[in-house]
Image 1: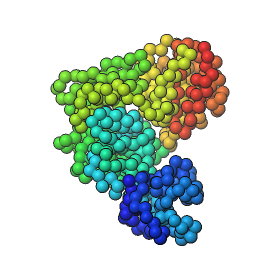
Image 2 (image 1 turned 60 degrees about the horizontal axis):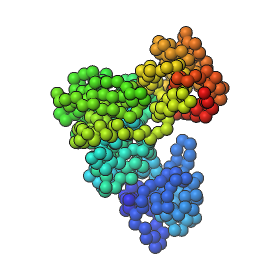
Image 3 (image 1 turned 135 degrees about the horizontal axis):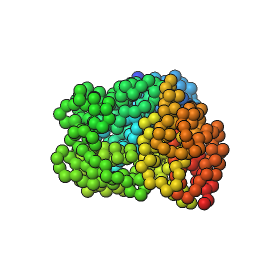
Length: 467
């Protein structure tokens, strides 16, 4: 619940309150005119692709009684709308963050932030599932991990919540630091450092610098501790330099407080691992998500559960029964004897490599058909990284590759000695070609950045396959 008094506390705010306005609070905040509800406050956010000011008429027709706008809009709006509370601020996006931070500080709730190049959304969901066995957890829905999504999550916080698990994302320096100033995390976990957003970060050292803004904040404030994945060389180096008493380490390959060993996969390529705390006994865990990266995501969730006092049996149950929310994140489905692996949620060199290794781990009776789209935001190294993926496909012994997108042309060119190596400019032709070569026992693996919308390809193939 957001009180009117909280709006009045926003820095530099100017309020126009209608005579006789009696509302003292609102259920939450909305920024989308299509989904905002009657008892919410509408923030008119101006983004890259839309402008909330254009939809004020629409939201007020829904019965909205409070709006937050740029101060310059007040004279025009108060003449037009006589019964609406209008809050003017210098920047509605910054004020949304300020409101969320102020709202959080009304509650005594610990905050765990999760970042990283790969796996942060699934790790966040797994950690939240494990902690939910003991606490009432507020978590980031989907991957709403930026300067707008994180505040919207925090504004849902209420007195029933006992723990907050937030995802923090970045593609520019300073973004995670800004998010931390809003949510003031007590605990931080970075899944790994990889090749992401090179357009802005240039290289993996730049990625590490950006992701470690989370660790830096916790070190600076001194009000909590960090989780360190020692299997990542960048995180391991940071921990060696900055580790303090209370920090938590976990690793498959290095000495750590929590250690684990990989056992194998079940028929759905869902991994099993054994983990232990210090020199205790190993316990076995199954993670109900696909692929090799699930080994690390599940281990991180186990570690968090142990640290925050969740029973071992409850951790096992949470990992085993976990259900992915996204329909585009490593979903495995069998139709007409064909196994479809939908990994179209996002893509960067590290996640593609992990996906291909997971595919290699599968016991495939037939042939693997690999469909790869562009990895976006790689900047000047895009051609090099796409070419490296093509070489990896060849080195791993795959035989059939289909690529889509201007950058993935370089993937196709660098892949050598394949039975099928085709590049496409339209998804329909790509889908028809894959369909023409499918046999029972085959696997179709689809991977690309979100902007490529390659789920359209897998949906087309699934709808037409009939063997």
